[in-house]
View (cartoon, rainbow, N blue to C red):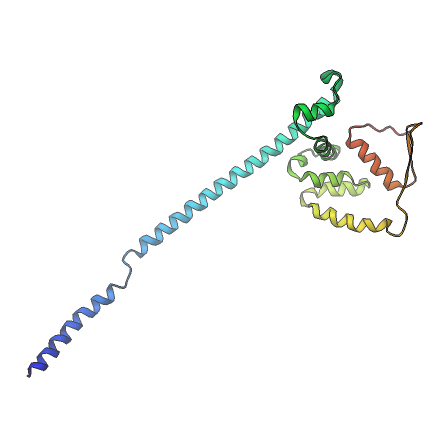
Length: 212
């Protein structure tokens, strides 16, 4: 055997030994460990996310409870303003002592009142007050009762669409007119919708209506 043949034989033997070793080096040695680490991190993230969600639910419920407590206490002060406030107005107390606007209070009052009217004050804690105010403004009592029954499912957009449809009622006619007599302190209207709007406004401002 020539010197060249001996060198080729040795080379083949070396390649036969080294080739499998080179192939094994491409296989990750800690594949299972890495997957376990990633899985544990995902589980930890999910657990933290659930804790935050539970915390938010509890805080949201507490905000609703506080909102109801506040409006009920304010209603109490309003009803007993002569005894509690002396010569001060309730509005002055609202703005300067409590620190909320008259508009905010009367909106909340309107929302609370419609819930109380149907014996569902819990709705005040759970439903968007803007939705409840829109329900309160519904003049048809049967329709109002239907709206209260499905208040949880309603959104502000539902009332925007309804308002857009109702706006066509006066499109082809003159807008209603309210005649105010300052001497007799009276308002005269011929349109039933306008009358109901005035009634709702008076009620929202805590004025009791007596029909004669």
